[in-house]
Image 1: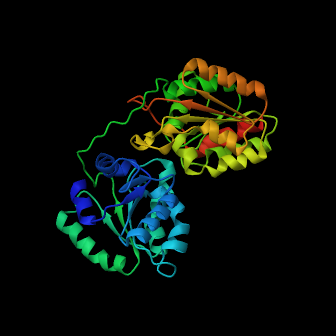
Image 2: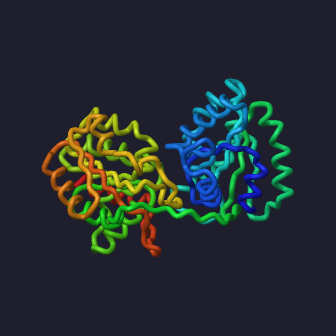
Image 3: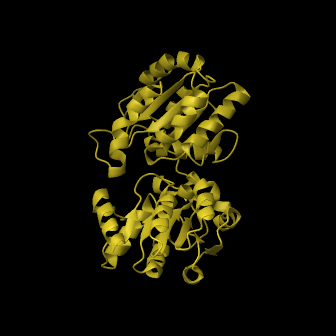
Length: 372
């Protein structure tokens, strides 16, 4: 279905959510029409944040908002959906557009498999009526779906369109770029060189893929690394748990701006505990690059300043290989909790692969090496 037709049938003028590769046509169209932050479109920090923004829109206007997300974000919306939007509480109508990763019978990455299996059940448990959109859905079908769901919205309920792979098509192709020159892949090579044999916990998306390939290219094993292939935003919390319980080891966290933003409260907790053996590296390209390059709000903001305000004893910034090496050396020498913000370009190799080991193999190898 053409994205313009899809949006026309929805009939709303406000969208908020977290970008998803399966919804790229939608995200690119919204960026082209409205940008990323404003009266008609807001890219949220996480999906629960988007639900709150959508509720505020309805309270201010009386109209129905749209919240878009990957199905991995369903967990983040359960609380506000059940305790804010639900008709037994405030009865705030909302349309959800959900990219269906890990759909049963469709090959996908391991972190999406179980989420894909429970996607529809979670909606049913939350009393959200849904319609599945695939590439064969016609304009007439979509109009019929909208007619069926409109009375539910008018009654203060929530509905969802679950989007199968390839269901939406669009022509918009906004250019996502910044002025940084250091690539994320090059930054990761410098980080692991500084880390040596120390354990490394890396975040969701291309950062973990590039870390895996950097080890392959160097002829190194993967036991040092825990690749957080799912649970976006929780990489630093995992690193905190490892650091606290392995105080004799220096622990490195390779985070991303979109992931760190998603659950930024973790930084305050880390700063309160102050594990002296943790170095938290945030690679900031101001983009949700792993799902298409749509902007985050962190392109013009400083994780270094945020870390210091939270209570990190040390924070550094870098924007090229030389300044990164200096920051890495200074953090190691400091011997206390440190954050390094690395400003990087948007983009990756076209032939970037994926880990060839399973998630379970990764966990077992990491735990074995961590125990040595």
